[in-house]
Length: 298
Image (tube, one colour):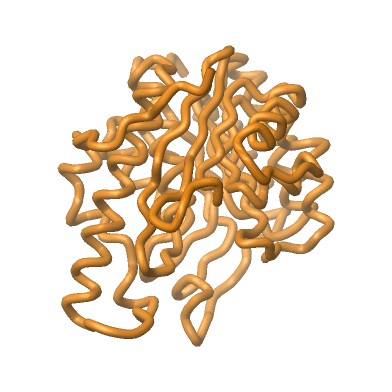
């Protein structure tokens, strides 16, 4: 197969019938931004796990292997980018490492964007034996990684209590072979803002991320997809990529929050009201208006 100039992504993530997490959060924005996206769903659930009742099934490793084999046999296994999010088991993660190696035989310049989904706010929501597979096998294969603070601390075994601590963690991740390290959110801000940090080839930027009074699911998946897209579209201008990614996310999150609060003015917003409004914000995804600028860290 002769590759044309359209970037092509293979995204291996979870899938929900209703709502926006995993591939449902990632595929639409990538397509809107001009990417061809092939995707494999690691799980197919009725909704994400914040809902009361979860129904569905999990893709077995041999089924994943069969799907990849089919792409190879039909010679449609050429990709410019590879994106992964939530993995449920160490074995499924080891399999992803093998898939990357296979895809790189077809395109040695393949860019692998890894969102090492393991937990948040000090709690792991995947089996603990996934950590060493990320740390020792998968992260060293990644070109771009987008962990949150907790995940970056897990992978490096280091704590970040301040900006210099965060920079040490970032350096440790670069030393594992990762070209671009993005901390999608850290608690290094204040009451009103979290801080995001992105670092590549000697340049490092931080950006304020305003906090919103609600719990969202799927924002990390959206972040990784947007960062992949904008790093390609801006030719790896890390400052602009970070600004465009956060501008898009903030617009979608704020719109989702306002519409939810219009329906329920007080108390905790239920999951069904806080599903990310991606379709309604298609024009924002295509052309985000930057209002918060990233600041260089010397």
